[in-house]
Image (cartoon, rainbow, N blue to C red):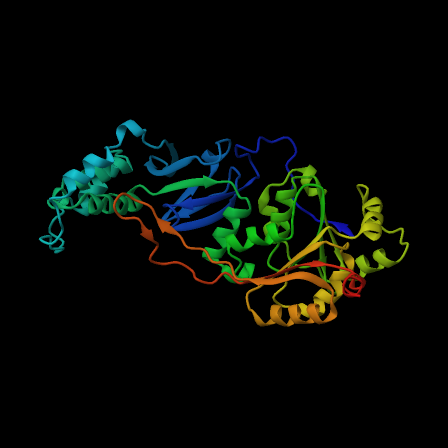
Length: 400
């Protein structure tokens, strides 16, 4: 049994960035999501421009930056959101917009009188990205004829091209899961954020829990459990065979030392021997005591996401490690492995409250006079088998 090697933070303010921390860069309102580690030499490429991440060090999470051009090349400049008083009233906008439509507009590339040479000349003279966007709007012959909705789309389109923005987001369970689901869903087993939250709830992950985790989806499950425990309780990441599963995603959570020492990793064979034998082997930081506690009382819950394993075979070995009345939640992107496992648990009278859930999430666009479900959304979120482990004698006693 070993302690997971997770980079820790000791005395840093969790609300602000620091040199060496991981951040999630949200470029142009979700068009691109990038994970980065802040340092004086780290850079990010936005379009055809490469910008240093030095200005991001020491800023609060949630800060907004904009790409500007300077004498030494492009750089990130912090900007503030407009105040509510600077925004037009929604009612006035809707009233003024009633008489406009886009039927008479023809996109023949002649509406814009500002050429590419003019834009480059503005840049060489030190014009900011916002000034270029305003110049494009002022030199468009059709902008005033557009509806307010079309005007906003035009403004956002030009802003993303000439003044791209970067939002500094803190990596935590939700943001990491959303980013991976959008970029590389296969790396996290197509685990959606609502499915992840349902897993944690069904397994009753709370403070002072001892959670057994089988995580073959990059470490996001282990990180999410440790984040919810907050340093109160233990996460035991177990694996089948002799090679631990990759846990790269866990290192993105910026856990402090108090949380990191509560994450341990051990093979199932070592864990089983500790369960049934009086083994004196353990880990540093009081790991012998933890092993004895798990041997005597078992784990308080089980969460499993192992798409490469046979679900029923894995559950047969993991279930005896739980205490009686301990909940478990098993994720799989396909239904049949969970259905087979559920049937075998019912026949063996090993668990009660068995159910297979299919999470469903629908995103809505919420805007004045145009609130509707998003046109493009993912309809698949995998399946979860949940239940409560029991002693088979309990069923026999109740029916006798």
